[in-house]
Length: 184
Image 1 (cartoon, rainbow, N blue to C red):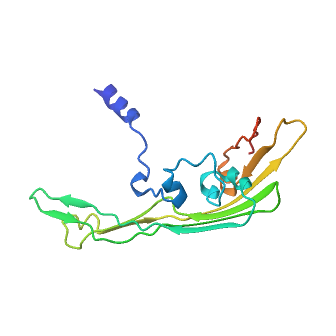
Image 2 (image 1 turned 180 degrees about the vertical axis):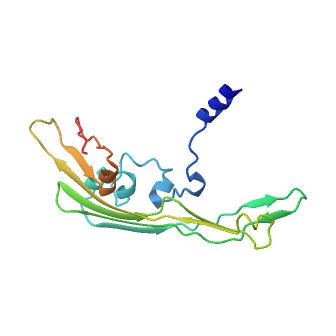
Image 3 (image 1 turned 135 degrees about the vertical axis):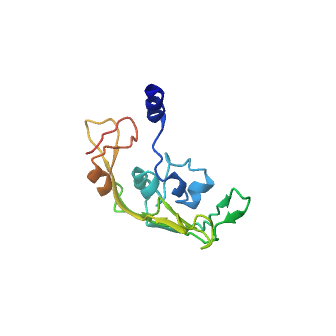
């Protein structure tokens, strides 16, 4: 009996906060069903693909918001239905990108990856477990993207760095042309 229980526990994934996930970080991205990550040429590259900042050649500022009104319902064993109170949750996003020259671009973004408010009526049956659940996160990302040409490389390579990625110790780069390098 212990082996099936262990297999079930190993089979399960991490739950994380997917129920609170916000995926509306740009009107253009929502309109394109989030498929524009490989070719991004506006300030929202700060969120989707920082290497895309190098594609912009001017100051680009984007400010947006999506009004989310979550609604949940609960049906008790006695058959009574209860619903959450309607409350607007506006997860904002702000992006700015600026090309210093043809080889270096800067970006700054503020966005929310997770956020939701679930207010129940004070008299619902679960009032001792939860009356109001609220999660709001805000991220501020400064980014730098640059092209570095070298005689040793057959083409230019886009290098990006984010303080957040450096703190986490991650490695990443984006290939433009025929070669790519990673930075630590």
